[in-house]
Length: 260
Ligand code: F6R
Image (cartoon, rainbow, N blue to C red; front, side, top):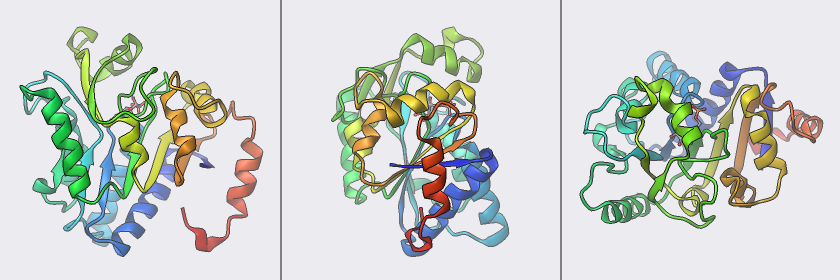
């Protein structure tokens, strides 16, 4: 797990976009794992700008949305399929048919989850997974207590997560209780994971999952088991880390050939 501490979200967005741009140069049909929420927005913003101004090409790329609410009608503005379309995929030249999301309105939820896992496998797996982290340590919607080897499935949101996400809806009563999410086992199979966190409200969470024990109570801690995870955080989110100086030192002296 590599921890990179940057001045702010603009720099975080630029560094993550560098990694995605390099990946697309190496593999034009790369599979991107797409998280929603506020944290990845500067990445999508930067990628849209580079597409517009420098022609970064997504024409062969594929995307898999990380999670989805259950029970929102198709096309609901807060469904994650819609959010990703609005914030990212409509702003670059990725083909709409190459962007997939779990089907939160399926009549047969277990079958839809199984189909999603199969679609990811058939695409050859996720090359680069973008993640945020919830204040309770969730990644995707793997709330505390999630099996560390879980696959895509239905989960019940913790009330704090519904409160955190109420800002996107009119009121908390409109936030669904249930979601579909790639499992922790699914996420662990991505070849490279980039997790983004900013702000003092994430400082304790970052400390817990980066430097605490690997435990289901803090789902993001499972990333300690992943061979290639990059954590991009700002100074505020890094403020509780015990080894912050070491992470800075390691990044400042990193051999250039290693990349992200
Ligand atoms: C979003 C997702 C969530 C968010 C997390 C942090 O697809 O899976 O895990 O990444 O709730 O959200 P923000 O970035 O809004 O703080």
